[in-house]
Image 1 (spheres, helix red, strand yellow):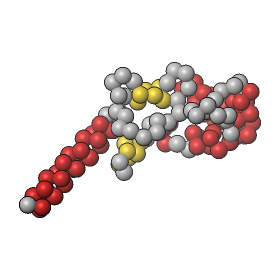
Image 2 (cartoon, rainbow, N blue to C red; image 1 turned 30 degrees about the vertical axis):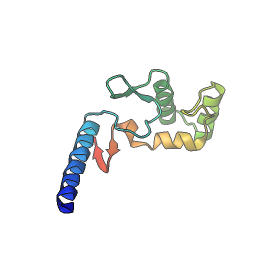
Image 3 (cartoon, rainbow, N blue to C red; image 1 turned 90 degrees about the horizontal axis):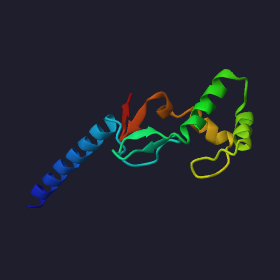
Length: 116
């Protein structure tokens, strides 16, 4: 009897994982931390956050087009009173994390699978 229950549990687990991967592939939120500049809408989709996405765009634009250091960029964001996701002040490490995050170039890794 234990073997039958174990087999059923294995099948349920595989179906659940398959469903979560399919949901992630479609861009739906399946849990975890959402990258700064995004939010989850009423349809459980990850979409740009109109309040914070401009900050992310400014970080990328200024870093790519100006001869600016992470330190200078962090200071500039603090001077504009922009806050991080947790309400803190901007620092070089947080900006570096954003600049090196694959989510911002359209890639996502969910449940061990990379999605373009």
